Length: 221
Image 1 (cartoon, rainbow, N blue to C red):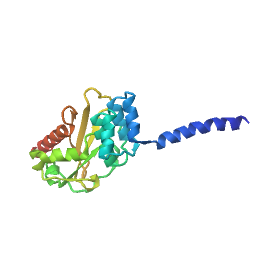
Image 2: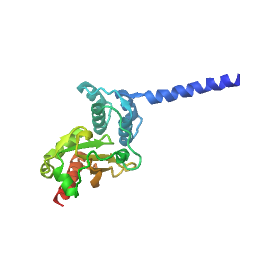
Image 3: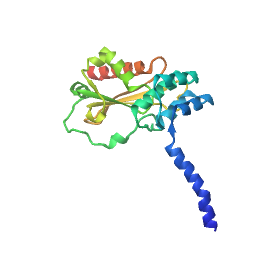
Image 4: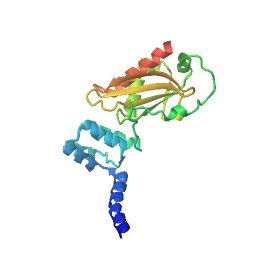
């Protein structure tokens, strides 16, 4: 009898756990989070790590605005809906070291970081944060002469790229809104450059400026 009672008490907790794992965020979920006063940063991080089913039609966006959902949250919802599956951001600093164990995709000897840049044909971008949108960052990069001078083609998938840029949000930087980036050569696993910026102003523009300058600095030796 005691065992039956224990099992009966355990079932509700299991059901709650299963429900939490399969919960899907909707427009109404975001409206409720904004209504009770959760900070925009918390809402953005929840959106980035959850399964979502957002309605991003023009009519739905109008309703979100009428419900006093901030513009940056609405932008995060649109970006999240476009990007597909959630990304689990690493706790330490926005980067994952899972690729560090992968062997270089070619054994061609490269003698310097400058040669890695000049011999590269393609570059890919990967974010562990909701912001900025991939499209906005690509647009800002292509505006910059220092990036265009590299003659790099931006490709959607990192497995097709020679160079790879990781971008992540620095945890607990709610005031400064710091974002970090790291550029490395996938053919050798060499880190070419790293840096950080903030989201003050235009995050996509800030990141594009720093990434462009880093590539130019390495290329010019």
